Image 1 (cartoon, rainbow, N blue to C red):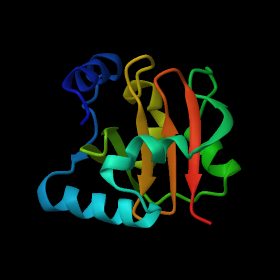
Image 2 (cartoon, one colour):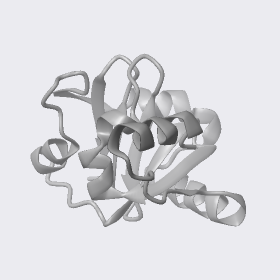
Image 3 (tube, helix red, strand yellow):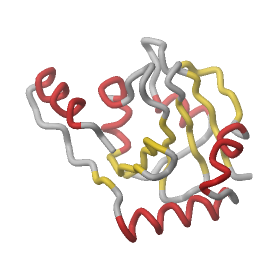
Image 4 (spheres, helix red, strand yellow):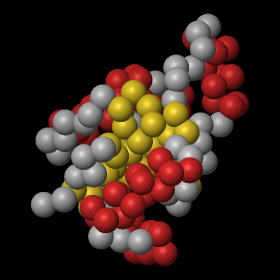
Length: 141
C-alpha cells in the first residue's frame, strides 16, 4: 500500500499529483495471491523460505544509477504495462504503471524502510528489493 506521505512528497517535489496506483483488496487481492502462490508453488506461510530461494543479482538499488529497466534487460524480462508491488507479506499489494515505477523508483521505494517484491500478471518472474538495497530475482524455468 503506497503510503500517503510518499504521495505528498511526490506532489511537493514535482508539482503534480502521484499517478493512479490501485491497491488490491478483496477478491482481486485473493485472486492475485492465489495465482502468484500457485505459479511459484509456495504458500503464505512459506513466504520467508520462498524469498530465501531468490538468486542474488549484481544490482544494488542504493546505487545512484540504479534502474529497474536494467534488471529487466539483463534477465530478459519484458514486463507488462501494469505491474504489482508487494509491500507486506503479500497482503498489501499495489498495481502501478511499469514505466512510472522505473522513472520514479526513488520516490516509491525508500531504503531502510521498504522491502518490496515486483511482478506482473504473467507470474513468471519476481524481483525482490530489500531495505538495504540488495536486488534478488526469481524466474520460472
